[in-house]
Length: 418
Image (cartoon, rainbow, N blue to C red; front, side):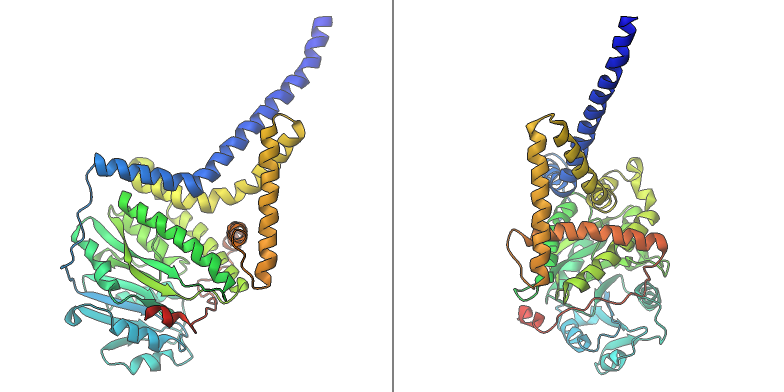
């Protein structure tokens, strides 16, 4: 009887020990996932590239003298303030004139954008009075494209003069189905929202550069990218992230999406934090929609390296890390209270400091101030919080494809083109 009583008393203690060990294991697994998603994956890809360059077979070098016929499609919805500058920039792009066509799509515009575009010779303008969204406009425009390559760009971005040359060179490799250009957000000290956006895109560009060297870019930016015209398939008109879904659909066909870092598009930053928040929430809602439509890419056995890159670069940051962050914080608090190890005091107070800095950065950002070392912390939290709002919009079906575009500053962007 005493032995049974002792065992009954030990069971709660043993359960508590196993419970805390389980919490520890989950904590470190979650910490590893966060580290891998933002740092570890990039380092692993660099190692894999090194191994590939020393052991594997490299991709063919891009051809500088390959000039396929191409159509440059400019999407413009109520862009009267910048369409003239955009068309002038497009006409000045270096490329054989007899192999370049320019198509401006202005569906739904009511501010005179089509009339401004029609003033230019050699420009074809497509306009439908009804606004159905960018994806519908893309499907509409592709019926008029008969060239080997089609290049997509937005009206509120300017391209470097040799962007088209850089963008078509990788097509010398027949395994390339599309090429993504590099997006640059040109932020100055007067645009606090743009500082975070610019920092994020520099990080993204670094990842894309390495993704392209390893195998394929996992998602092009709509500001500038191209595809082989024959690979285009009309997208559902309610597609939010048309550029992302279109580029990965091409990867699903067995092609790789190359990266041309010198094919640069330059865009002004969001006008304010509120505008940047609106844009981020839309992207997050589109991200969940895209993942639901790209389920086959989770098949590592079929898509191998492409699936590995897609899951590591995109899925973890969209669908896992934002929901892990609050959980790992709460687990850390529990581990601190259990006095298991001083390590958890260090990680716990570190997390508290991190979020305190983020809150401080938010306060400075509201005042239009950007403090080095503080604002990037705030922007990281800001991006992950936007995922929750984006997920809610996607679940409720409230993110329309005909969204209200974010306001951007255009008053000083031309200076960077000089």
